[in-house]
Picture 1 (tube, rainbow, N blue to C red):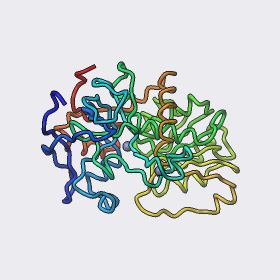
Picture 2: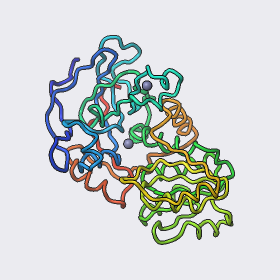
Picture 3: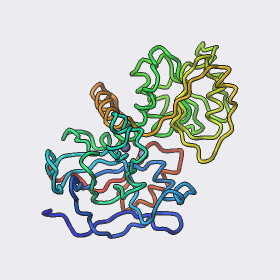
Length: 353
Ligand SMILES: [Zn+2]
Ligand SMILES: [Zn+2]
């Protein structure tokens, strides 16, 4: 534990009002099977925004005090007992769903369905801090020369890859609702997987422009232009083959379901803040398949992410701004705007590798 201080800066969710507090707290000590990581970069995610603004979901879910944050890259600085194969200086990330390893899903290689999973930065202290401890079973080793923003994005890029690969998209016309950071990262993945066209519905002009730059065939202004008109321009008169709902907006699912081709397939990653009405007749009459998506397929997805990076994927192009962690309040304010892509907080620079 050489050179590891006794205390560290951390963003803490206290049980009071909106916003996170920057506090000096003890550096955690790695227990059995855990490593201690110096955090280098963290991504700000919609989940973190909900925890910061103390939304109804957050108040129901979070046991304060809590250090949020789950998207990160860090550098190993120490290991607890019973840890082999990890050495100081290694660049690492971690799967944010810490699965139990014992339930029927975990024991049949379906850990992504584990109902006992603890979520980093939601159920247990996360990575909005100078240091964090992580069980080695969740840790992912990065190559030493990986770009730090790219490494920070493995978790949300994994959401994108997992959603894009729910259904075969080769030669298909895909509609995608919601061009937030995950939706944006999904567009080049769909093109790489062979989608004939990708139509993106998004209210923000800034994000529609980013979507076009990332390979969207057509964009439409959600809430103003109907998805159907973009489909017709592409000669897609029967509706979309594949739909990906990535916004959580109450109107998006209905817009998507109403524009699907007969036999179409829809994956839903977006998480609406409240129950939404939808016309169920679209599902039965159009004979649609609707697949819910959450998280990633654990390390299978991390391996797919690595393969896509090797073949030229550049998810870090959605990072539009960096903030030092001391400017967290400004960063969280900015992250609420739709005139941004992904925002990254910087905590420290690599020292050991
Ligand atoms: Zn996230
Ligand atoms: Zn389990």
